[in-house]
Amino acid sequence: MKRTFDVCMAAVGLLITAPLLAVISVLIKLDSQGPVIFRQVRVGQGFRPFAIQKFRTMAVDAPGTGLPLTVGQDSRITRIGRILRKCKLDELPQLWNVLVGDMSFVGPRPEVPRYVERLRAEFSEVLTVRPGITDLASLRYIDEASILAYSSNPEEEYQLKVLPEKLRLAKFYIRHMSLRLDLAIIIQTLLHIARIPAVVFTHPELKAAVDPPLASPWTSLSSFIMRWRKPIIVVLDVSLIILANYSAFALRYDGSIPEGELHTFEQTVLALVAIRGVAFALFGLNEGLWRYTSIWDLQNIVGGVLTSTVVFYGWVHWVMGISGYPRSIFAIDAILLIGLLAGVRLPFRVLRDKPIFQKKRKVLVVGAGDSGERVVREMKTRAEFNCQPIGFVDDNIGLLNQRIHGVRVLGTVQDLSKIVERLKPEVVVVAEPNAAPEFLRDLVIKLEPYNYFSATSRMLSPWSVSATTRRRNSSEYALGRVHLYADSRFFLASWESLKIPTQRELL
Image (cartoon, rainbow, N blue to C red; front, side, top):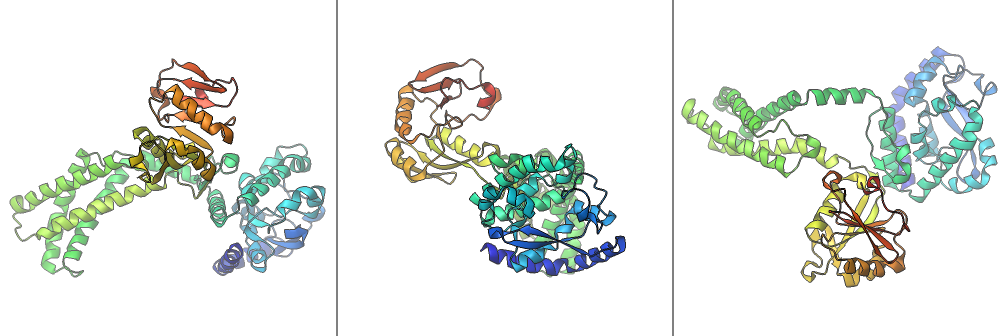
């Protein structure tokens, strides 16, 4: 599957970028003497050497002078070369390397033989796969030249610090390799190049590798949109009001609106915009942040549209005196407008904090009541928890095999051992507001043989949603080897010896 993807995408990429490749070739020839393509021996899969291809970005005699690394504002780089390197366009010829099988789109970046020989044992695992155009290390060290420029000995810095980290990330990629991860890395690379501050995949070990750029044109655009958010929303809503009303006429008359009805539309649309505008303002449709769109917003959308439709009906018939206005238009228009208003808002909520690839901890929830529902809802809506609920355990037999937010009730507490053996959760959350110490002790005894509680794995009861509402007074309870940290909202049990969690750890 990976090789098929590489071949297809490389072929398509070469065809699409052919005009750009030609333009860049001409600019390189006009800018400096020497060949257009720079070839260098790199070590590929199975320690097989191959010639990597790039657009030449340095003076023709650069390989014989200076370091083998590019550091800071290297004087050997040509004028066109600086632009190509900044936009990563010098890597485009590597599409040919991918097509012929020397490389892959995603994989550990290939190194020169001198570095590989020094760490041959480390590279033995890394070179079990094809090297790639981009990888996790490319994201972390996307501006490697600037990083090395701060070192007094760039080559030593690269060999002792940068290269070992690249190898660590390469091994991590190999352990988690999948088409989904490849797509996430490719998209993340394109976003970094475009300096778009967005993250499409996360993992606790890779946080530093995927941080979005701090400054970019998109940051200014985002600030501008937030500053003028309300006028932008008003303009968009007005456009949707007109579109929905016109579409209602088009649907009513099968796409061919009679001239008389078209005149009716033109005669009434301004009144419709004014009435709906007032109703939307009263229902607060231009005030909410779309990334937090909820049922409350949907209720306001429905309320605003239905209220304005009733008022508009009265205005058309009793004020404007247009008795021939088709009644079906009112219903079709309202349904279309509700769909359009919800349709432009919901994607911001659905896509918010929804990375393509995210390594999450598997969580088993004990308790399928209201607290359990809140636990799962928080896990599913807040990516910072980095948790994936895999099932409920509850003693209420009537809930068996039922689902809450798509998460199934797997069995009772008596089935806990079997469920743990089968699903191997990393965290167990106790969603019982009034859990007795005896109940918690019994759970700990059941889970102790599986050694699930490490220095970072804890058992919480119930899930803490808001740290600001908790009281500061708290007490400690000891249950054998387990230390329970309790306050007014939850219990926390961990295998962290006598260590008591700090307030920061509880957040």
